[in-house]
Image (cartoon, rainbow over all chains, first blue to last red; front, side, top):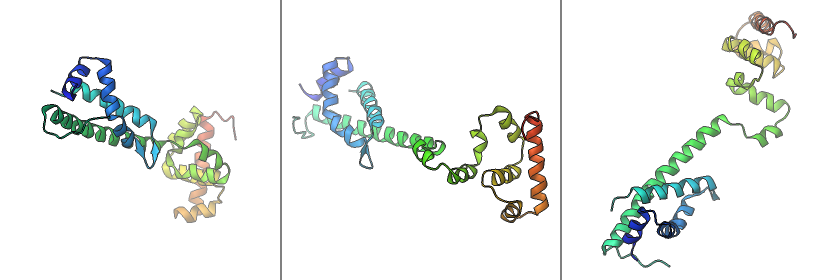
Length: 60
Length: 136
């Protein structure tokens, strides 16, 4: 399954597709959540929400 | 785990676009988060360092942050103090919290000894009147 199909499924609310995309971008979000060498859990959570919102909003 | 993205096929282009979109959103959210945190920290006193400071340092610390007025829990006292002028409050803090003499305060603020004294007692009287004279 390519990324486009995955994204379409995720937008329809298929949880496995969302999960897969989250898995793909998890390392990136973790990297962005580290401030001065300390992992910020709250920020990580906020960024997760941002990712979900991006999945919903992006136009294919 | 993931396939190599050559950026040529339609799906790969879409993925790159999504990543760029996500990065922008993530950076904006992160900036917002850091700004919010910085703003909160400006108004919050960290509790653990607060406890360490017990004693004279704490008092000086409180006197330096001028909205000390907001730190009083007593409503009447708060009301009495909020009616006072800033200079009077400064004198009161220096006298009560930092335990300075009138001479020292007069030198620091740059007004006369009598002026400091008068202003201090005037404020004390005001507070007493507000509190209903129950305290000295």
